[in-house]
Length: 377
Image 1: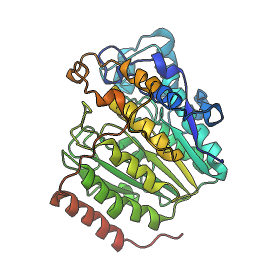
Image 2: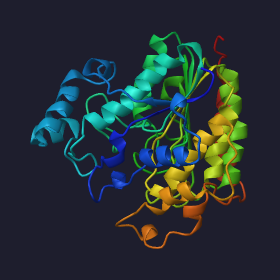
Image 3: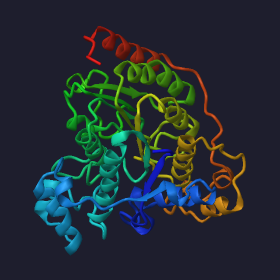
Image 4: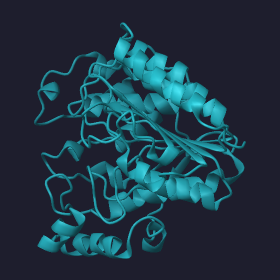
């Protein structure tokens, strides 16, 4: 590929998990609209995500579960058995009109990315990043696990060594299950400690395949830079991956309603920039993010970073109009949004001291990897 490709789809524009669910907010459509308003998304770089076929989903998910999703979409009814067995129809994973089509489209984009990256390149699939999905049940807003499907697709297309880096505020429990003990996969997860799903403690190495870094509340930009430069980049470099998959969840920023970290979007963009060029293939996925302004601005900046576009100090009128049209009903942040949420992409940096808890945990992980026998390149 001569230039990065953006995978998206119109299904994400109107589809919602319900009026009061955290995923009621527009996210992917906002990134598409902002990128186009800024002149950053020409037709040549955009790919419409295909809807994954049921058989393709069964590379990870069980046939009964995939069939249940299809049946529930058709009937809009989840039975007591669906709830008990698959957690479909719960408050977290509700029945909604596109309960199969929407996640199958996100998964279709990730499966396609694995094929398109056969010869190398950079792909951005912001609809992806549903890292909690389990083989036989929905989990944490995630009905399917597109990161696992993407990595399996990469494997089918000749990629052996995969570095999976996850900076979402929540631990990637589904991906950890999928690649537990895989000697050709390096999983690095930076997530808020004691936040749902409360997995991924420091001592959990997923059978030797993972470095889990739970971080304290209030993580700032300086601390993420320390983690990036002291843990993420050296470990990925030493692993020598054929492909990097980065899950760039936006819920670590200070304004997100579901987490308690204090990052600016600069921290995420710096991780993206640092990983570019470290492998012949890079796939960047979305993930969490539940404030429409912060997630839209952050993910648009990811696309700018991947393309080398300069982020303007003040947005042009068309881009500003996209942000002014957003609403955030049912949340106090939506009642009085600050002006810079409308006029800029870049947050003010949120630097601060690097706390001993962060230094100590990074040190433990670094010493652990130094003691581990070196893998074959």
